[in-house]
Amino acid sequence: MPGRDVVVVGAGVAGAVAARDLATDHDVTVLEASGVAAEATGRSAGLIAPTLFFGDDPAVARHATEFFRSFDGTAQFELTERDRVDLVTAGERPEAEATAERRSAAGFPVSFLEPEEVAERYPRFHADRFAGAVEYRDTGWVDPYSYANAHVGEARERGATVRTGVTVTDVAVDGGAVAGVETTDGPVAADAVVVAAGWRTRELLADHLPLPVRPYRTQCVVLEPGEPLGPEFPLARIGSEHLYIRPEHNGDLLVGGGRDLLDAPETASSDADAAFTRDIAVRLPELVSGFEDAGVVNGWAGVDGATPDAYPIVDAPAEAPDGLVVATGFNGLGVMISPVVGPAVRALLGGDPAPFPLAPFALDRLDTRSASFPLHSTSDV
Ligand SMILES: Cc1cc2nc3c(=O)[nH]c(=O)nc-3n(C[C@H](O)[C@H](O)[C@H](O)COP(=O)(O)OP(=O)(O)OC[C@H]3O[C@@H](n4cnc5c(N)ncnc54)[C@H](O)[C@@H]3O)c2cc1C
Image 1 (tube, rainbow, N blue to C red):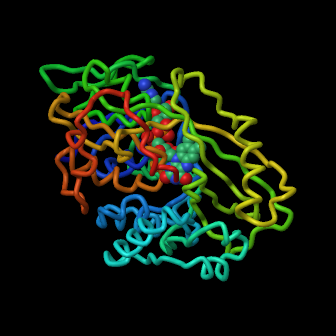
Image 2: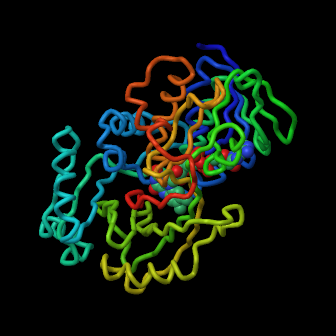
Image 3: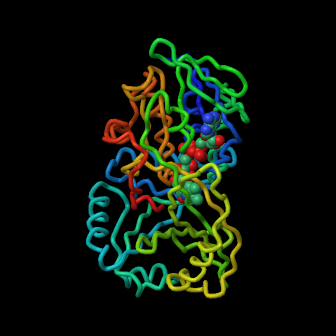
């Protein structure tokens, strides 16, 4: 149903992608309380590994991976392709081998590496610490701020209006259907409202749609090794240590980890904790050579929304007012899975079917609407 007035709440990566895709044939207004990519999106490490996290839904993973390749070169956006290894312990090895086999059988460029292959291909890892690795050859990283802004730029070119510094205070509902939103700058009428307000989506929709989304905080530090990392150094996850790493363009290393549940997300610090930074500086030399005297370049933290099964919610649930779509609960994976948001939201608003199933993102797959659930461990990116 083209030509509708659609409000998108939030200009993080989810709102940015939704706005760009909807703006081709709808009148789109983006309302953002702060600035484009000012919250979780701008704090992301930007790792792109859809096959790893979404490969059990092959059409989803393929759509995301292919989108990044095709969008590379748009505005200031650049995809840096780089292999990724998930280093595993002996206890983790059987499941890792099974995952590699399953992904490979589904046609993804994924293999299991023995420890000696890890040592040969990636000599800076202390390979004797590991019982092998799953290698993904369709991964990479992006600068999430440029990525979100490239979407917003294209949305504007397609006619969208983007208003920053405007907080949506409620969704207006009339006769069981959305009529627009209330904001700190007055009401805005709309035929449909896409709420992509990150972890705040739950509280914004409290009177309309209970959502099982809870905020958590996660952190990154960047270390400068004695010898810069070369272009062969991969992205990696060391699940047993709850860490992930990716090289910077200048040979430094970004290290991410930590998942703290928050009672007061509004006041969570956006700086990395001193204890987290110290802990990384102590543990990293045991995993990667050349970090014995590494300098700490910088560090930061951000808040994202978790769901009970670590999959996002992108849906127009039957129990919500007509015309309300939500895109939230990205579990530390929101940049890499963002390409699905556009086609999903278009389909949910009555457009063409998405080129992947929407069921994995539907709210009714979850049997709770409470925000008190344990965090799912696989979403350490
Ligand atoms: C430290 C860190 C590292 C990460 N690393 C990765 C990674 O390597 N790869 C990956 O894929 N993902 C990663 N993530 C996760 C990713 O950043 C998030 O999943 C993603 O950015 C979520 O996007 P979003 O649009 O849902 O939320 P956000 O980016 O938080 O955007 C929501 C927007 O809505 C606005 N808003 C909220 N309420 C209102 C309101 N009432 N009215 C108007 N506007 C409102 C906010 O101001 C905000 O700009 C990381 C996250 C963190 C914190």
